[in-house]
Length: 383
Ligand SMILES: *Cc1c(COP(=O)(O)O)cnc(C)c1O
Image (spheres, rainbow, N blue to C red):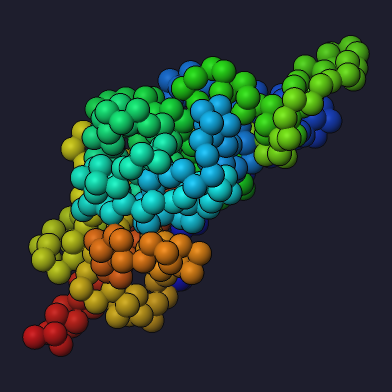
């Protein structure tokens, strides 16, 4: 059996039961289960606001747009971001005609506060921080920079579903935190996300913008008697970004199992840790920051000969991934090529090992064994 990087696990019967309720009721859209999921998400994280959207990408876009419009940011103003991320993080800045300024990463693969501070200019308006693999990195120091320079901080928490820092859900102090519930993330639906603004007013604007700028959601417009309050105003040129009750149904079920699921992810990560411990010089696991209880979305190692290791693993039907290719090597962002040497180096040497709930101890042992063999051979050839 091939060993894949990610395979989502759904509690199928429970998901179908929730979805059946939507179908029986004849309510699959905005409202109903989306409201219930938002409430449960707030209870789980402690966030004050949560708006369910159809992906993290659109949630990030709304966050950038809402800050830009409210604070009067100009085209070509700058947002500092990371080259080691899924491209959504940086595209949402570009959507709003702002400039992505790439800062380098540190040993956690998250933004390095020292380089971030060096890249702050008069045009810098915000920082988007990504907790790679669920790791907090030096997030607290980034918060301090936000305060010192009066910037906005957007946390791309796509990997951080369930991550805690110093015992608290991470992102409580960010100006906006955005989660992904895309199929391979820790809380899989099919596609959806959650946009959590710290500020109530922005949460309200997001709710209008995510439904074409209409100022009331469908649920409010009709009551139990079928009384249809059909008249509404349109206040913004909004988007079709809101989530729906079918996705929320799956999310509600998956949320119940999130802590248990993340616990098993941690177990898998500790099996990898144990297996690689004697080979620390050849196989360097990305360290989890102090005080961080990572969601363990990813298990990333850094090796000398990444491509050779990838090929050996593929030959054994093991299919790791790379999170991520340095975004400044993409033609869209090549203006920044060379600006983040550490990110560029890491991007050539990292590999994400299979990590999902269907893996057994035997699977992990097999991956560990082949990784060790491969890097030992590689090491010998190199000497
Ligand atoms: C998956 C991911 C996103 C985008 O999430 P979607 O819900 O698929 O839009 C954004 N940022 C990071 C770091 C991601 O891994």
